[in-house]
Length: 168
Image (cartoon, rainbow, N blue to C red; front, side, top):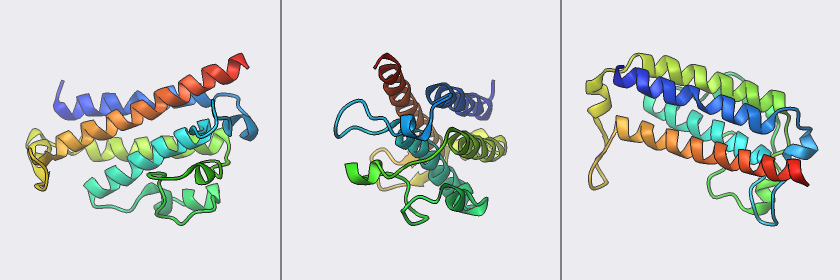
C-alpha cells in the first residue's frame, strides 16, 4: 500500500463513525451533551468535518468546501464563514443546531475533496516540511496524520455521547 493509499483509507474511516453516531437523531437530539459544559453531538460532528476541511484546504492551497460548495449557507449557523469550532465556549457550542442530513452531506463532500487531494501526493510530497517553526519541523505527512487523529478523537467522542443519549 502506498502512503497516499494508507492516508485515503484512514480518512474514509471517519464518515461511517460519524454517520453511526448521528444516525436517526433529530436536531434536538443532536444538540445533546452528556454533561453541562461538554460538547454536543452536533458540534462534534460539525467540528470533525470543519477541522478536516480547513486543514486539507490549507494543504491543497484551495478554498474550503464550507464556502466553495455553499455549505456555510446551508448550515446557516450564527458564526462567520471562517469559524471551525476551535476554542469555542459552551454558549457557542450549543448554537450548532443542524440536521443529520447536513452533517453527513458536508462530511461526505469534505472526504471526497480530501481523497482527491491525497490521490495526487507522492512520498516526496509527504516528506516536505510545511512548518519549520516546530522541533522537529512539521511535514505534510505528519500534518495529515494529525488531522486524522483529531477527526477520529472527535468522532469517538460523538459516538460516546450517542451511547449515553441512547441510555437516557
